[in-house]
Structure formats: C-alpha cells, structure tokens
Length: 475
Image (cartoon, rainbow, N blue to C red; front, side, top):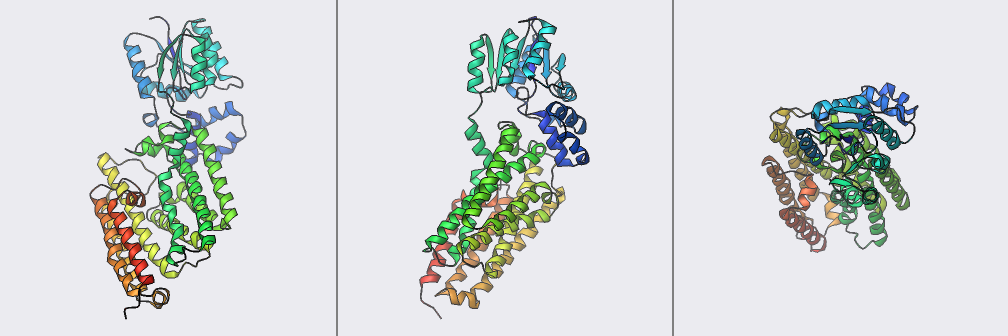
C-alpha cells in the first residue's frame, strides 16, 4: 500500500483541542500566569504557538480515540506510512507521535491565519500529489482536505459532516460515531447532583408551613436557580480537573475528560448556565445567597479544594448555604439550632466524600495518584475519625434542641422528636460503614437517594416530625 494515511490531530486522534488543553493547564498550575496577558493580546494562530511554549501536557492521559489508534497500528504493521497533521503547535504533535510510536512523519503548519483545511490540503498535495493520500478527520474544516484525498476516514464526525463527506465519495472507514450533543451536555451538567438542592425546602418544611404557596413557589424558583448554577460550576470544575480526572478510574469517563463534549461547547454551556442561575435568583429575590454560593463554589474549584480540611469545611458551608437561601426566599427564618445541626451533619457528609475518594485512589493504584488535593495516603486513617465525631456532634445538637424551649413552642409533642436522634445517628454511621467497606462511589447525598435504607430513614423521620407537630403534649 503506497498511499500514506494522514491523520488529523485535534478532534480525530485525540478527542480534544490540545491548544485549549495547554491554556487550561497554564491556568490550573499557575506557573506562567504572569505571561497569560501575552496570549490574550494575540490572534488565534499565535495563541496556539504561545500556549505550546508555556505548558506541558501529560501525553499518557489525553483522550485518544482507542478504536482509531488500534486501526492505525494495524495499518502500520502492514507497512503503511502514517502521517500526523496539525494546524497547531508542532511540539505537541511531536510529543504525541513519540508517545504513540505510530507516525513516520509530521505535517505541522502553525501560524495559520486562514482556513486550516485549505492550508493542510495544499501541503499534503504538494508532498504526495492530488489523490495521493488518504485522510482521517472529524470536522467541517477537514472537507477541503477530503476533496484532495483519495480515501476518506471519518472519525467522530457529526451527521451533517458525514453526509457531506460521503457525497465526495470513497469513504473507506468510519470510527467513533458521534453521540447526540444534547445527551452528552446533559450528562456533563450532572443532573443527578440536583437532589442536593432539595435542601432549600428544609426551612419551609421545618417551620411546618407547607401550606404557604407563595413561599413554596419562591423556594421552587431558588431550587431551579441552584440547580443550573451548580451545573455551571461543575463544568468549570471539570475544566480545571481535566488532567486529574483522566487518572481517576471513574471520573475519566466524564464528558469533558473523555473528550465526548468539546471544550468550546463546555465553556459556552457553563457561561449560559451561570447566567440563567443568576437571572432566576434575581426573579425570586434571593440573588445574594446565590452569588455567595457561586463565588464560594468557584473559589473551591480553583483553589480551596487543594487545602486539606479547608475543602470539607467549604463543602459543608455550601450545603448550609442552600438551607439559608431557602429561608431567605420563603420568608421562614433559619434558626441557630438548624444551622448548628446542619453544619455538623454536612461536615460529616463532606468527610464521607473525601474518605471515599481517598480509598478509591488507594484501591486503584499502589502509587500515589496526582491530584489537586492536599491529602496524603496516610490521611485515610484519620479522616473517618473526624467525620464520625461530627456525626455524633450533630446528634448531640439535635438532642439538645428537642429539650429546648424552641422545640416546645413549635411542636405539640416535642418529646416525639427524640426518635430523630438515634435515627439520624444510625443513618450517618451507616454511610460511614458503607464508606469503609469501599461502597461509597458517589457524593453521599446522591448515594443516599439510591439507597433503600435511606428512603426508609427519610420516611420515618418525616413521620416523627408529623407526629410531633400534630400529637397532643405527652408531659
């Protein structure tokens, strides 16, 4: 087989944009932040060159198209010449070529100011002649190259691009059919995490005001606001954690880390979600709690998550902020008792999350994984001690509340609330037992939603609160 097979780099060989990956790496690691202004002052072509000179990518963690790589290895064994092409930084292409050991040559044309496809097509025709090569690509920008190629290899192309390529004729192979963008984007938003935002309904429930329709409507609005805002923050967090997520046994399958969702679309989606969340908060009159939540969440994603203990206290504060926001919009005051109980409870849950992650890292590899956390391997022993202590502290606060004047004023039979104390302690300790057994693979609240025992605990707690509210005073 004499015709070389030329393979596009970004979006084809790897399911990502390596220039944007380098830029994100600069932002995350901060080793060249003082030089970022030079990048922003340039055009797209110089952007690619300068980001290439300011950062290094971990070649082993990039989201390669495994099916295509295996196909290329087969072609290589048959003696075919394989060429890597890119309109980006040539250094990146060389590093990837060295890592894979597949390519005989590299065609890098950095500094393009016009059409990427036409420039690469011209260079390949100059080298190999018209119809003298096959070309593997993924996007509309590759159409000019396919017009000059003998054979077309489609890799992760959209239905419209696939249709246009087939009209050119001689499609010799297709790989990695693109999944619907909508479903991938929704997955990146992590809607299963929205269950945590149900905490905004706690104040109106605790105050026994479920008949307050205006308060319920406002609470529903802030619930929606927190949902879309949290999804925007999750996307930003995924941008910042690209490298570490790809080393994680489960997180590497997230849409951005796996390359199933493009970095550009992810950035646009994050901006839209944050704007929509703020607009909803303004509409229901709770913009400040939402802005504080968003600000702390972003600070957590950027820097706070890297400091041991600061990270879990921040997570506990974010949980508690949801309750505060629910009280603000519904008009039902959040008591200090509720804040104290929720603070200790959420601190325990945050520590459950961190302990589960540390255990997963230990089980996945005997070597310490590179993370953006400040924890060490030996911390997996003391983190559960902190968390279980917090669980007991929350139960003590709850017991003190049941015996307080505040409970006596609010409930007809406050003594019934004592049933909540062992019930909540049982639930939290069961989460810790599940964590120690290696079963805590998700956020603990998300885990609880999928756990039938937690549903029984929740129903029992609701029944206890109802009996305490409606029942006659026992003493």
